Amino acid sequence: ARYSTPLVEACVSEGVDYCDITGEAHWVREMIAQHDDAARKSGARIVHLCGHDSVPWDLSALMLAKKLKKDHNTDLARLDFFDHIRGAPSGGTLETVFGILFGKEKNAKRSAANKALGFDPLLKLKDGSASASTISEQNVKLQLSSGLSGIPRPVRTVFIMAGVNALAFKRSNALNNYGKRVTYCEGQSFKNTLSALKTLSGLALFGIGLFIPPIRWLLRKFVLPKPGEGPSPEAMEQGFLHVLGVGKGEDGSEVRTTMSFNVDAGYKDTARMLVESALSLSLGAGVSCDGGVYTPGSCQKEVLLDRLMQTGTEFKYHDEVSK
Image 1 (cartoon, rainbow, N blue to C red):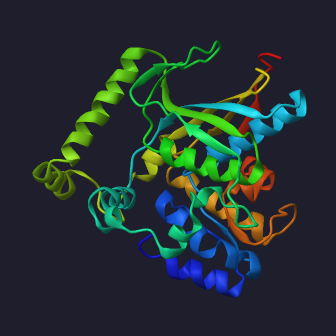
Image 2: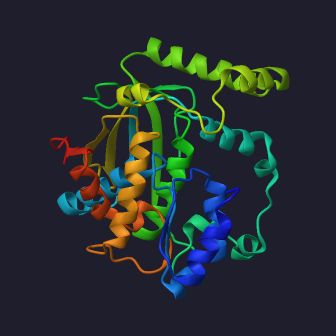
């Protein structure tokens, strides 16, 4: 958000495709409000959220919705994600967080274009109207057992990026029409309540520290990585992300998927996701979207998933659970 708006504007003006790894939903909303119409005219495909935020969840949602439609001829009614992850934040990620919570981004005002739109830009369609397909976000806030059978890590607690992933899904659902009002629920998953509460306690203490200015200063000065710093190569090799998705149809049918990244997804595999997102557009075959402001799930779709699977990502459907 700090540096990329002029680049988006230039790409829109010249009809040049663009991908990024932003996780700043407020900025994505502004880019839709300000540039979606112009991008449709110039042919520029502006695709945000092409990294860890939010490719794994966005593409999983796409495939779950398609499977429900193909096998059961039903629309998506509920989407649950169980995130099993090992990773650590970089200084750049933390700088973005500090900007949103305490910096100038916190007080950023909506643009005139955003205000004039009159509804959430994430719902904007080609004709300028608001999509009737929206979501009810019910991400896990504290600690929750899913109540679903056959989940290997059934206890969930808060996942920091779940809100961003839900908004990416909101944009994709608006454009792809998975369901008229889909309940979205995501959380970091654990085998038992004790493990979930341990992680939740650590997040709570860290969050409290951030909102106490002297402690925040000490953390930034002596503990947390600076911009340009981040996990070591060894730490990234030991990282992973496994996303179990459960899609429930309006008729009660259920399908499940798992998408796995077997190294750090926040940085090492985010680079791969971004490269493959761009190659999906530049090589052209199979990507049919016209100009506009998109998410990966509403633009590159299965083309991106295929490229990721060819370069290290694992994706599978589970055995059918119910009919």
